[in-house]
Amino acid sequence: MERAALWRHLERHHGIISRPEAKCLEMTDGQIAYRLRSGEWIRLGPGVYRFAGTKLTWLGRARAEALSTGGLISHRAAATVWGIDGYRPGRLELVVPRGRALRRSSTRLHESTQFDRVERTVQQGVPVTGLARTVLDVAAVVGRRRLEWTIDAVLRQGLLDWPDLYQVLIRHSRRGRDGCGRLRALLDVRFGDTAIPDSRWNRMVSQLLIDAGLPPPAVEHEIYDGDEFVARVDLAYRYPRIAIELDSARHHLNRDSFEADPRRKNKLSVLGWTVLTFTWADSVDHPDELCATVIAARKTEIA
Image 1 (cartoon, one colour):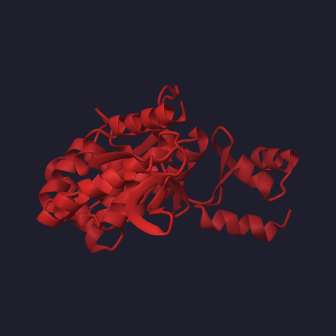
Image 2: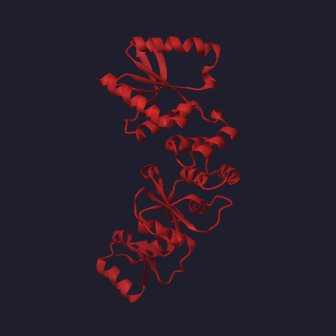
Image 3: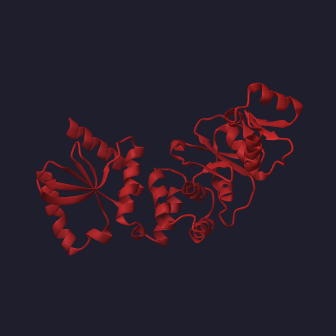
């Protein structure tokens, strides 16, 4: 073991180290046990230790909680770790998979059925939810005014932009999902669907389909009849031939589109393509139905 590497690790991580991290630094079980017996290290939780010469700070406690539970610092505590204006160290909050039995008197626990979709990030040495997910989680536990202040802060500080906020909404939007309704209502008032360029929206829906277990669709896919260009569709599965169109009022409620879109879709149908059309509301308010429709179409075409 290189002792300098150990000190660097402790210095960068608030004096906190986990057993797997110590093993990665080539420490043996005997060396770990010796440090615990001698009092050089103090056990904070299962497989998590603090160097006795380091003061236990709020960030250190946050790191230890996350490491010892396998969860992530979340909600208002995560906003503090990310440095969002208006949030200060207070009670720790931790998100864990639904059904994990934990008892924490000093930490507020949040169980998530979408833990697998939480972007695991390390900020200031602390395992924490991704920034956009943190804003969504905050939306579930604060009032409208505080949420608006939070969104103003992340935009002002350059931490997120409008598409980032819409993307996390689409990816996690499920019936009954805490925070989605509040965040959606505020975004609609503040910006509306003109906030999302079509190319960003395409990629958001693509991620939604991938999360549902589908293979990645082609984005902005061009379709030809021989050498003749027929259409560029928002998303596509080449086999079976399924074209997915995302219609926004901004681009489709005009006379040219009103006349051209049906002709284009007819040509695609003649070429054997199944054309599915969804709106912004479908992707945000009914994401499960959107994914189910695409899955059903793929099964039908394959059959």
